[in-house]
Image (cartoon, rainbow, N blue to C red; front, side):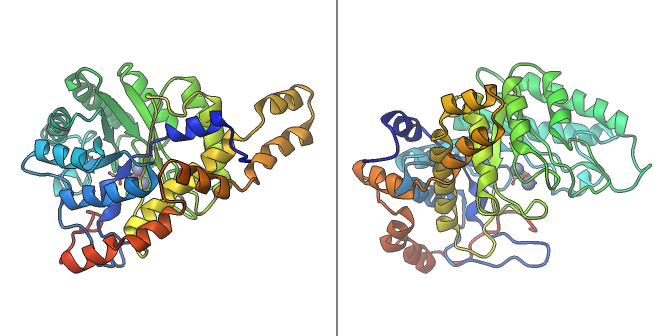
Amino acid sequence: MTILSPDILSTLEAQGIELPSWAFGNSGTRFKVFATPGTPRDPFEKIADAAEVNRVTALAPSVALHIPWDKVGSYDDLRRHAEDLGVRLGTINSNTFQDDDYKFGALTHVDPKIRQKAIDHHFECIDIMDATGSRDLKIWLAEGSNYPGQADMRARQDRLHESLATIYERLSGEQRLVLEYKFFEPAFYHTDVPDWGTSYAQVAALGERAMVCLDTGHHAPGTNIEFIVMQLLRLGKLGSFDFNSRFYADDDLIVGAADPFQLFRIIFEVIRGGGLNSPDVAFMLDQCHNIEKKIPGQIRSVLNVQEMTARALLVDRAALAAAQEAGDVLAANAVFMDAFYTDVRPALASWRESRGLPADPMAAYAASGYQERIEADRVGGVQAGWGA
Ligand code: AOS
Ligand code: ZN
Ligand code: ZN
């Protein structure tokens, strides 16, 4: 007798989490990048690795690309390669943080020539989206200043609006612009898009197809992230998640590793707000595997999301609402905690088996021989781009 009802199982079956291509490349901190044996040498191999995650979990149907890290001669070839392996190409991430010209900003720069260069980069990303069939253009900006008085924050906000409006105009059909925020780093005094409010204000000024991206690692310690999730869903502006976990700053660790309860609370608000399995909300990982093996790191990540989703779906919402309405503080909290403390792993394992999937995807991957094969075959894998 499973604890997961048919309704819960069909909701879980529809779940899809997008993997970031850069999670498969070598990455590290500014102190050291450790090379991992078997690291992909090109975007085709990154897609192949991502497809392995999907093969053992059926949870990862798409892969996000990063331009220029994932530039290829033919995006048609890359798209076909992905489809042959049972996955598709997802969000296109732009990059305005690795060019000397962008030292003092890109979309906010005082020099119109540099702003145009950054806008042209986004136009190139949109051309790639046309070729890959991707819906979302995700923009994370590294811009800001380090010292009070260094920059005119207000003028930068105005220029940001102008640049984003020019990029937004170029989108067509179903394409969307998703603007990520981050409270600091690499700029330390002020960041041009530091929080959800700024991202919301900027995308609201663009139009319906501009949304906010919430990266779970981009908040000050102690921030009630699930409140932000609730508010963005309420406003119809939650476009995507970048899932990861953090202890201190933008750690990009495996989602659910640092604080599984926080992940549970976030997913509960997603469910409450109608965002789960909604086409309007993209669920992505934004992680780096600096010291652990990358493919198992991604498998662990999507399983963590699935486990916390199953637990959040177990919340007895009728009982919760009744306790809330009665003002019964402890009963409401108990309903919530009962679901969180339920171990769903055995039920998920037997459900996977019933669908022809491995009960234990981590073990199935380890036994598949794929890791040994790539370690033997691939020499000189590439860095993800971080610290390059
Ligand atoms: C940076 O801190 C952000 O999390 C971005 O989402 C990130 O740059 C991403 O890895 C791809 O651009
Ligand atoms: Zn991110
Ligand atoms: Zn980040």
